Length: 141
Image 1 (cartoon, rainbow, N blue to C red):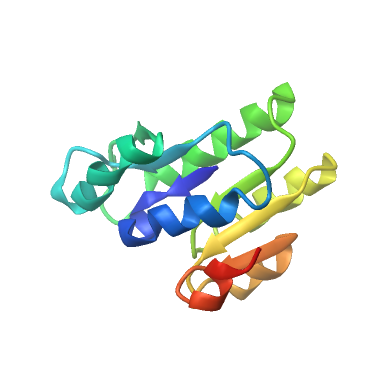
Image 2: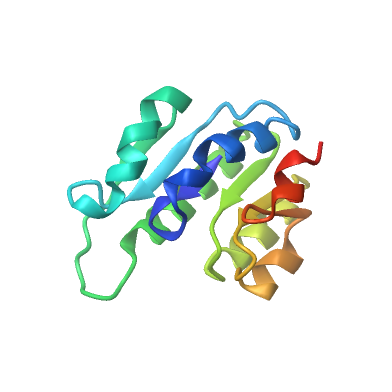
């Protein structure tokens, strides 16, 4: 499970983990962002209770999301080492649409999780996309 923490509220963290478990056991749990600022404080408060590892990336350029690149690099490393048998990508942006394709080309499923405002391209690319801000999506098993 690779979480773009800068793109999703921490209030979805616990339901996200519960719903992801219906696809299998998330053995890798990483949340990406710039952890030194106050923006991710709500995530800091839930990371340890859900055994999610924070992956820090400084912002080197204003307006750019450097943590997206780190998430993609880690995903590719996991994919190429064969360490996992599927991916849960948590974001509402379109930045991960190409990554989903690469995962699927290797024969693995890619499950997306995000808000209903998520990129239609990202949603369509995923084997299944769970809309976190719809209660029915969280209770589905």
